[in-house]
Length: 275
Image (cartoon, rainbow, N blue to C red; front, side, top):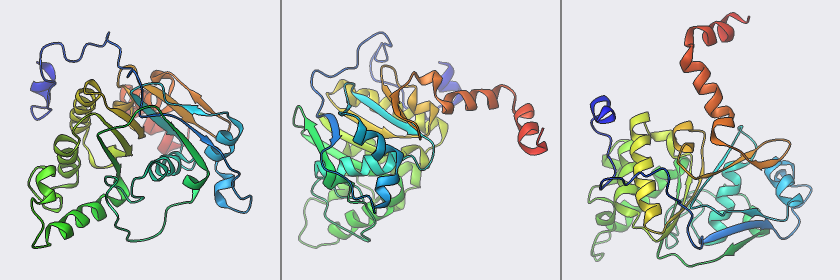
């Protein structure tokens, strides 16, 4: 196959026809079906000025009707803040991990979760909140727990049997998804592309697809046009003006990346020459 020749380490889907783009990826019932702001945010708080908070306050609710939802938009619009608040409101640790992770290295998360109400339509057997900026702390917490002499079996066994600190950043991300994400779960990912090469992002797409087929839901804050291409996903664009559902190919991420790759010399001329 072309992809395997181009990047032989890309993990391909299991079984013939596993990536049938014509099939529906909508779950019967999502674990989180909507989010709304149910109590006012203090006007003195910086949260009050975030575009996502302003618009979500005006909206009745933000609906998650698909198995995979992307939150996209420019830096500073509040994508990661909203995803973090959803995670904490759902019971996840603010710095990442599963719902039974309780470590805290610094109280830097916002209190937006206190103002949210989540509509839950089903109950997952598994779940994980992955945030790129604090994944190091999550890996350290796993190692600390496994250092307790009486702990058996070791937690790292659920992550591939090898300390996440003894792998590259990208390898540890994929080890988490490959080994720890068991399906029938809710997975919240904050900018997972931060650690992954383009070929590894394609491998992540395969894993997401297999987990979706195993009754899983993903809500992902991302800047990656590769990830956003997941078929049938809902893409919510967050901006200064509104929150709206957009087609993947209408996103700035797709259009700018495509224009750059089609003619990098011309784009570099505009950027560097100022013409």
